Image (cartoon, rainbow over all chains, first blue to last red; front, side, top):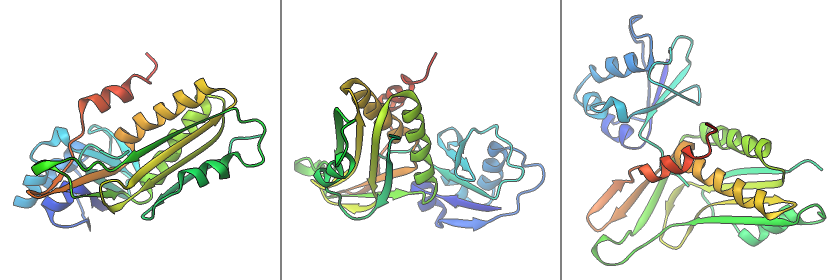
Length: 83
Length: 155
């Protein structure tokens, strides 16, 4: 699946997007965050406070407990500050 | 007549008067227009902001704004709606975004504009980074903004 990062999540990881193949045990958004955080120092830094991270599946806001099965695109970002 | 809805994301500036005229021209069903314009603050002294960069999630930003525009149209008898949000690097004094609501009477136009602003701040995927003499820093979301958006949720 395609994973996108925005704002300081993007800066900490050092890339705007990538393609990942998470293990089948990563069933929810929270599971995916935990798995990503284990991939290296930059990921651990970006996801050090999982409760702060917001996520969207296929461009719709989702909660940590949302299942990721079937998702084409998952985005991770800090709380929004537009307007 | 159904309510025309315009949603645009752009790097360039917008003309509030021209957008208002475009929405109201030739119409006799509009009795009230409310216009909100968000402007880049500068401030003074050492903490002054020298520039503001807006990052957005292309595709989702448009979709999320459209979802809230549709909700506003369902909740209030609007006769027109224009939302323009800029992205990229802006200088203090420059326009950031505008919400224009039109209705037969003022209450709906005022309330819908406030509802849209409260939701755009907390749900539309935009992120602001402020540049100061000390460096660039991502703006943190505020509890006040979350509370402002929450008050529109029916209990």
